[in-house]
Length: 76
Image (cartoon, one colour):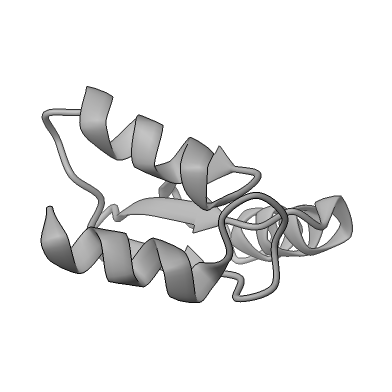
């Protein structure tokens, strides 16, 4: 199985822990980068030269929510 680069944008730490536990339980070796809100995710994406294979996005977040994040992502 291919090792995926995953960007997880989630402000609820319980949800972050659930995903990490699931990845670990399934013994998958995916690389997970975490962002607490849309603005932090945009900062991560601007710094990286190596983009994620998949983005898991929470829609209800402080600062910059998921819909606002997607609208900005379409532009850049």
